[in-house]
Length: 304
Image (cartoon, rainbow, N blue to C red; front, side):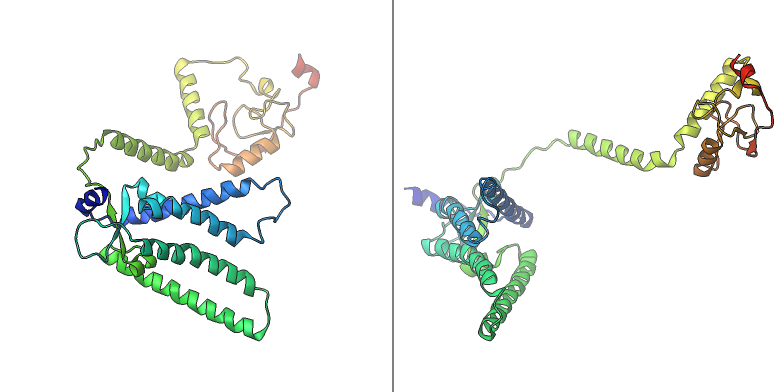
């Protein structure tokens, strides 16, 4: 009864991007599974899995194949995207599950092929005998030929949209949707808000480095002080000699820029070299000339 219902299901072609997404999900799952497995051996001697790594990986992929392709006709990535494999060798247009031979050959070509590649690389990487070198060259030639065929298959896949991998084309299995894809009602309100916000944020990230925030702040503060008519009685050179207008400490080698305020030589020199349009942080005056302070005051007078 189940087979009759399965045969009555119609075939729904899968988009290219969905097939590629399924392949990427499969790779991500394999990496996650391997990382979780190796984390169980962190307390053991280093390199305990190195000698048997191809066999351990093959066993894990075998278990994964048993509960995905063999039982559900779909990989994990395909199951997430509502996709499964169809036997494309059948003459009917209705859905036909994979045969046992196709499933076994899928296991041999994927899990067995990867195990053979890794194990052969380990066997022949350190051998220098002439016979081993010939075998190694033949294996490398075969691997290169398979990769070339995979590239050609991928180009054909981009054009026709079927058989994303060389294994699928050899075995005659095709990706189809499990259920008909209904038209979804999508609201773009949230997406529009996100796009506007991201665009505004990128504009600010581009604009902020071009703004001299310090100079702008000084301009605003000087304008506000002029509008409010604030006049300080300590606006004399003698009063302002007590501290540097930049660091707030007693001025070392005091210098002026043409206004009534005093700066340490290193403070004003570094600020002016960093910004040639530097202005006084107290009054907003531009640098006219950097001159040492000519007036001499007694320390007792200044502290008084």
